[in-house]
Length: 425
Ligand code: FAD
Image (tube, rainbow, N blue to C red; front, side, top):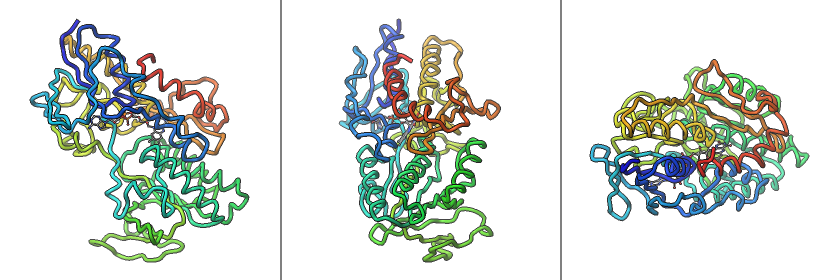
């Protein structure tokens, strides 16, 4: 039994799983979840909404269905964290003090870093973005419908210059749209470009090779070292900043303007009929502006400062992080949350009892990479490249596209996800 007060910031996939696990394991502890929303969103379903396969309602549940009994639920956002004083400030000006803190706020979408872009534009002017919200995913579906109804044109599919949640989602949007285009019987009338800031399309080398080959075979133009920097919705033009070596900058088709732009940057403006926008992402401002943010290294100023294996904060041992908010080279999927939750549970309990931390996260993450409507590949991997992939199902070959993996995505993963929220797996 413990009298400690544990505050969980955020009651999404990670926060809700932790609330249920800790409520089951600890007697006497006071557990508080800070979560402003009444509705839980099954975000992995948004790609299926955006390609027209799922009805949007299929992704909605009430948070009250999952919130464990006997815990305090503060229905408002945290607006500040003082890690020295162990205090969380809330939107109404009140304070929640904690002995232990689990940071599970998810991440923030920074659409404002793309000039001219805002989430309100999704669904109009040929703009789609699966990430913004359920409404955004639904309007992305509508924007794609509208493009297909035009019968031809240029589609631009972008990737972000930061880590993103579900790194496969921008690719899934490209593949499912391509699949729908082929169904129109007018494949040649549509041009698809995939523009990414990096050299790689995916962190795992064999997936990267597969994707590059597949895009080339399907006639999807790959443009590497391109970061979406501005959008002019009225003109349906997108400006990309070239972020690779200057010697590799060559202008491409339909070039409207290629010049040395702002402060010596090389930019290229491309016309589009449809664009899929992937915004830069970071920890939410409430974490970025707190003592908890990474102060050095690759996650500096952007992500929570946690040990990637124990998930304990690197400077505040009473603080743990889980889910999209943590600074880690891979992860940011619900599948990683499932692997992280038992680790945070075991290590938090050990910390509470003054013992050494027993559990380590191996970086497990997975992505049912949709390669066609009706086909997917279950890509699974961890921090260690030697264990390049970690198959969970003996009947699914992780390097093969299959209908079985699609069924997994379409029907089986959602119940498994809800079982995770309930702390049952
Ligand atoms: P979230 O589930 O986003 O929850 C964060 C919670 O914190 C929210 O409820 C929010 O209201 C709350 N919060 C935020 N700020 C505050 C604050 N200041 N105070 C209090 N509460 C706050 N994962 C997979 O495993 N497979 C997939 O196929 C997959 N596909 C995806 C497709 C899309 C389009 C998207 C968007 C995501 C996908 N994911 C997928 C990723 C998965 O949804 C996330 O990794 C997962 O939800 C992370 O859980 P989290 O708890 O960290 O964040």
